[in-house]
Length: 283
Image 1 (cartoon, one colour):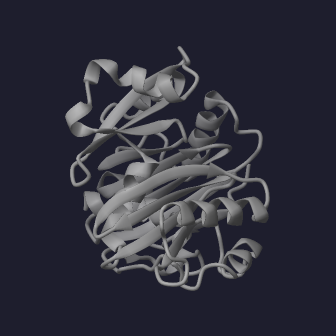
Image 2 (spheres, rainbow, N blue to C red):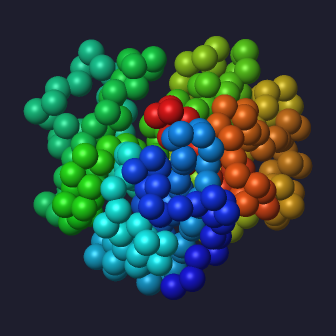
């Protein structure tokens, strides 16, 4: 497999791995990883892989190990490792109603239960809710076996926290585009008012689900901004179609809280937005 994005700073040195923070994003049919030099607070590396063959945990993890090995990072010590689980099997439970012993039940109520999954959770303190999500037991075991102190976090937690941080006063919508689906969060006066994930096959599907969800949440397409991030470019057909119905359609911007190597200069910021936000919070 060859990465569709591979960008590394000329100062990248595998012998300095102990001062690097690494984030790894696992998603349907692919993965990506980023490196931050914690001594300089600069993002120095990014690689992204996507393939229809990466449908099983073992295949994906072997591909990840080969990618890291090609950079000499396979068995090198790292300052920290955070794994971002980008999977739609998740739900939010109000903190006051959450019961640790019933977290499996929350997912079984909404999704088909699987004995091959492990259920994790994390609290969104500002929202006073708990994000409950599942990932394959085999993936969880491989992560812990390789990096026993790795932090695991769901992509929607990173996305929502980022949306709240970036949201202007009033109401705003945030859209994070993936290969076959997108996340939508609506932020109203600094609080999450809505979140959901939508699968799509065509640009028309995308526009329909987005506009319909906005209208159902009394969101004015002519008054409030809709901010895009993820695997999408301003020149895409999806953006062209959505802009017919949404007046203030913008793309997420780099707030310069972390430095980014010139080597990543040609990579659209929205592509590695979740990595950036995860590393920013850990710095």
